[in-house]
Length: 343
Image 1 (tube, rainbow, N blue to C red):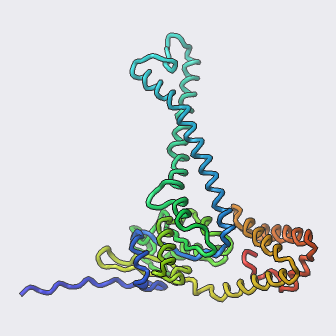
Image 2 (cartoon, rainbow, N blue to C red):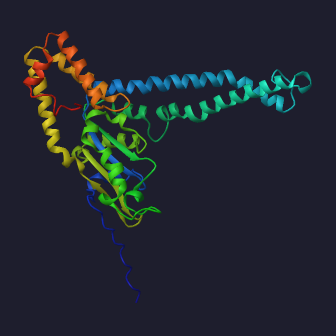
């Protein structure tokens, strides 16, 4: 009598992770099991996200036009070089008997520089607009066309240069420590989910050497939330990793938003107080100018350092004084800037 086949057991999940709810499977099944993912809800205002997004749009359009123009200008020259190489003499042909060694070296160097510039444009710079406008299954433009700009948006970040095996201590040469004991948890995950960082930067500006944005997953997440097939609270701020083998494994998640729930509540109260006081003074527009100022200053490369925060406060003081509001008295009235997002 044949023995019944043993059912593969699911591996244990290291803390602080736990099994992901099955309601998230429509999204999780579209993700690569080799990577680690972070989701969060970006609550920066839609108008600010639109302004931030306009910068890469213009930049990539300029790059695309420059690359296409270079191809248009250089294509006949490369064709002439090819014909010359095949034995059809033309203006690009170098006749050794008619040129000195100095002239020959100069022509070779000029052509080498042209080759280098064109290689850099096509190989290094050219892929930028391609990935921005045309890359599939997802790209920034396609994501924006399908989801638009919202006050609350789901962002999905994917690990870059490292993955699930590193976090679970299964990679070759790793320490064997998994989950919260893994060095990747401390140096990659914790800085990426820092509440202060998420308040200071809109989601599109969170791409760095450790994480990239997964635009196809972001589009899918927005669609699932819109259809109410996935609760947005489950994506509020969470980390996802596949634990186990392809056959016997499962998605695990860490609901890290619970760690900063108290600080978020205090920040909201401070913002409401800030806005209500200005509204009572008939200066509600000053509140929005303040938000725009802080968002802009905190998004400048180099980080929102203590020095930059002081400089931002000085700019805000000048902004308030233009509209006849004593900035220092106002700030003292609401209990100082401590707890204000970005300050």
